[in-house]
Image (cartoon, rainbow, N blue to C red):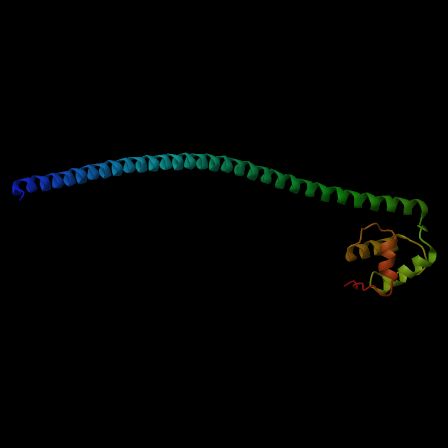
Length: 187
């Protein structure tokens, strides 16, 4: 027995209709999935933009604080520089006063005693000879620390960068008498 053709056609129509329905459902499902994914992606991007904006505001705030701190540090540096300069000027003034006091005390002692015999006579004679040889005046090798010897010692100490005391102290004696020391002749 043969089947009528009209029966086969409706079955194929049903299969086609089912396939079309299934394809349409799948298409709508994919569309909804894409729309949902796009919405989630958009929400994720909005959250990142908001986070970046917040970070930018925090960094700008920190920058402003740092600039304020830098300004304070610059003022502190200026103040410290001025204070240092004032202290150096004061130190120079005090050193000058000290040197003048040492000179006047030495002069007063020489005036009271006529001469100073604090250093040994032999050392004074050797220093007087060395000072004369270096051009610090014609000094008598008498072993007495008189005014001309003191002036020569003071000039020598100044020229050699020694502490100016006008005394025949150990550093001055070493510089004058030690044979291996190079001392500049006075011009």
